[in-house]
Image (tube, rainbow, N blue to C red; front, side, top):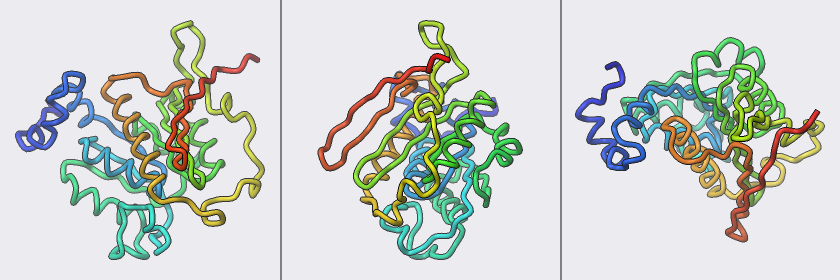
Length: 252
C-alpha cells in the first residue's frame, strides 16, 4: 500500500493510533491527504504545525509575503532567524524539522480565482487562514465549484470564528448545506473593516483559532466527529467563552 505506515511513522503517531476513532486506518488517511493552506501567518502557523505533526502527507502553502519582525508575536512557525525570508520557505523549513515525512508544496503567490483553477484540483481539502475578504470569498467560491471541503477562520482583536463549508452536499433533511455567502451575503467594501496592522491582535488568539481549524481538518480527513458544517463557532478570549451559531442555506 502506498500509504502504509513505516515503523518510524507507527512510533511517531502512536498516540493517534491508540485512539479507536482514528487507529491505523485514520492515520493512513492523514498520510494520503493533500491539504492546501492559504496563508502562513497567524492562523496558518498553528494550522501547518499541527497538521504536519499529525502526519498529513502533503501540505500546500500559498503565501507571497516575507517574514517581518512584527509577525513573530503570533506567527510562531517563523523565528528571528528567518526574518525577510519568504513565509513559504520559512514554514517549509520548520515543517521539515518537525516531520520529515511531510511533503511541502510552496506557492509564492496569493490565492485567487486563477490560482484555484490551476492548483486546487491537486488537493482534497482547502483551509483559509487569510486576513482579507477578497481571499475568503475567492476561496469559498473556488472550493464550492471544485467540491472540496473548506475550513475557514478569522480573528479580530480578541475574538475569532471558525466554520466548515461543504455546500455541494445535502444535510440530513435533504437540503444543500449552506455556503459562505449564506453566512456573509455581501462582501464588505474594501477599507471598511480595519485589519490587525491597524487595530492590533492578541497573539495567542491566532493559536487558539488556528488550532481549532487544524482539528476540523483532521476530523474531515479521518471522518471522525461532527465538523462545523452549518455552525459558526465563535471565541471571546477576554470572556473565555465559546458560542455556536447555526446557519442554513438561504431560500431563493
